[in-house]
Length: 438
Ligand code: NAP
Image (cartoon, rainbow, N blue to C red):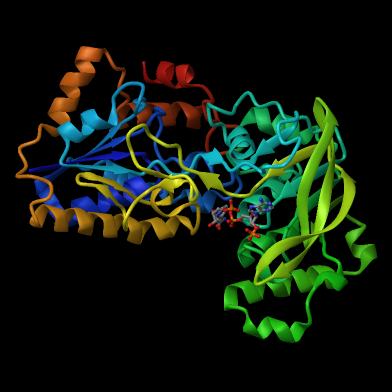
């Protein structure tokens, strides 16, 4: 019998567990740890609440979770309840599937002013992550600046623009819905430090901006390169750029029918933020592309900014004693191998890129490596205690483990509490989750 501990119950964690099952069959026991009492990581707290079909992938993870050889060990934080070295003693392989939950810093003056948030915080807030439920963003101003031109920036711009009715069927948490419904924001500026050919937005997600009830995307024709230059783009990006061209071609009087403008500002790099406690303005510097990189021109202009959300990517949380690549913001690893018996997968391995589906080949590949290492004798001869050892440790420490069966009770309570038409109303604090179990 081989014992594998996976830290993190998001897509990377569950695909790794599924791969372990398929590879080792009955000869493996997998424990999936999570610091929250609820599983699925970014599926629950990252994927936009109005993208319910994407969240449906959790049914596949549930199939894995309900098998005998995979177990959910919720409400257990590494570093607080158990140390990574202890898990290494107990399990043949420990796989860090901890994602990249920390916002990257902007590195500009004023970024710690009030009403300036990273997307992990803001997305966590509207998705009911217990860590960010108390964020209290102030949406009483008129201009929001969203920094970055990726899919997260699109999610944030969409959330700031939707009407109450457009959230029907979503699982946006009540505290966020109430604030968004009172929002006075009528201008959302998407700031890209490079140009239309360098956006990271995928066509399906970008196209949604054209179908919002009270918001319209604004792209200046003059910002778009010659159409002939699109031929060199890879097909997905070309589709996205075509959408930008459609947005630019929409007559002004049609756009003006919608009271919220989502403006694309290209070649505009955030330079500094100003305000009196709370952000009020942003300086942006014009950039030019040099060998694909944005380079400042020294031409700086000031814009109003009542709310700033930076959607510029994420970093993995370091774990003491685990080698970390500071520059890349993830664990130092060679194709997922960190050191004998210690692995990483998903965003913790490769950084915050790709879709949920990208984690599937990642999970299968890391299990192949573990199997190779077992075959080569790198992981010893087995005989580790695995889950029995962890259970003994948890009992000694009085740890309050939340099992998958417990999670199903939380899930049922969330479904019962749902607004009409919504799939669930999430608990946003850990005590409430635990109370639902008991
Ligand atoms: P992303 O796709 O990497 O986009 C980050 C954006 O931030 C880029 O436009 C980048 O510009 C910009 N940026 C980075 N550093 C900056 C700085 N210092 N100043 C100004 N701009 C800066 O990241 P993301 O949007 O966080 O998304 C993460 C991953 O999740 C992506 O793979 C994304 O596709 C995925 N995701 C998917 C969905 C979906 O499929 N529905 C939804 C959300 C997220 P440069 O290109 O110039 O660096």
